[in-house]
Length: 181
Image 1 (cartoon, rainbow, N blue to C red):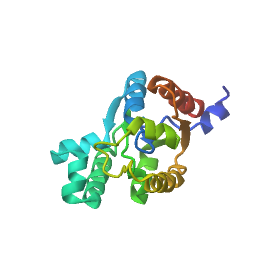
Image 2: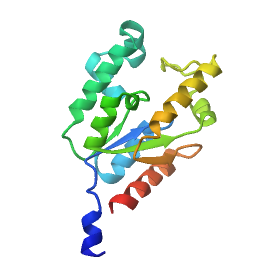
Image 3: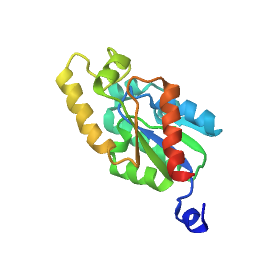
Image 4: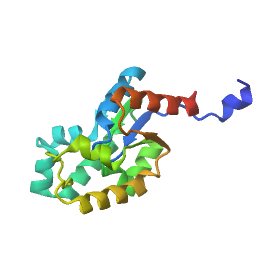
């Protein structure tokens, strides 16, 4: 590669944020990508649960969605300045403009795009998922479509439908390396 070509390539991101709808595989894929890179792995939902001492579902039920979103943003701010971390974000975190800015400043965003039929098959009744209402397919589709419009703002998009987490992780790595190496 010429010196000029090397000069225009962006540096490899310090953080890699996996974004997508619930059931898209962010946590499973993220663990595999992190292991392959030799990086740390963080899941914002699990971090909120650790910090608050209760499940996401319970936080939603007892404190409401906005309190949960505040906790998510605090976790995200806590990741600022870290390097070599793959982050599986909660399905709604990227909807917040300030969170999107933090993610873009700190690293690369990858949308794991799973079609709704795949999501439905993975989530089933959605136990433990406060915004998943399998009994109301119209509400599920509306939530899914509304979020997809924002997820499309990610730097990268990887198809996460109907494949194994290993296959999706390989696609994430290939996509990132195509730009950064």
